[in-house]
Length: 253
Image (tube, rainbow, N blue to C red; front, side, top):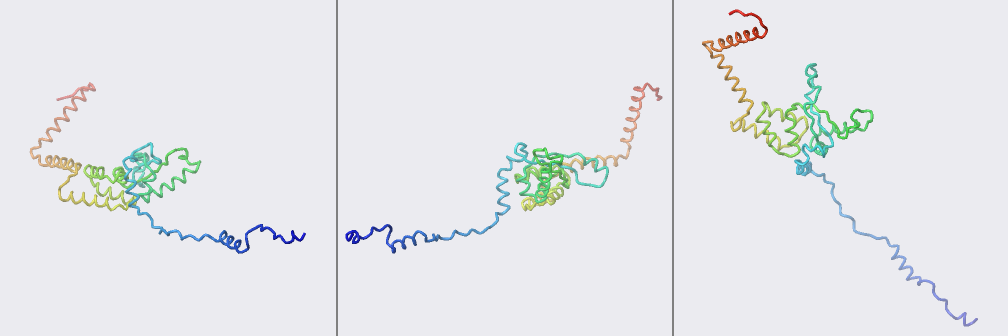
């Protein structure tokens, strides 16, 4: 018993000081350097638009990639006659909501409203795979050229429209304002065309045709001898004779 009492017990754990140091090491909270702070600077719209226009020609007019359709109607009016004419769409253009939402505030709002209507199963468009947008731009004939500009920033379609339509400049600007476009480059294109038109460097083909019609009317006014009137009387007599022969009506000379 004495020998057993003289033997020191085997330690079952680390000494108190080492255990305290180890516990302090294990439970010490890990303090790391703070993460770098990035300022929430919004991406400029011009940067996003430029990136989208890099794919513009791939998407413009592409029906397979389209997720909405623009139904182009005449401007809204209160005239019953004009309302009957505006009952049918002038054109239906496949479009892509990403381009429309990014570039046009008006189309962005219309797409939001149309999306709510599409979610309603009682709406007639609920079964259509692409969202229809029924719009009434101020100048429907200029809308396609402006839409191509929105997709691609290509001036070819707009300049072609300028050269082939009267009052084309006012039509393009009216559509741009209606869409809410904040594109200074489009304004520069319009101003450049206006300057070329005033300087006589470009001409509008429709105006040239109207000038020829005006020259013909002026020639009629200048007809002092009455040759045109004699020709019209002869044509009337010949038509009367032909009509009488066709109907077997005896005619007198």
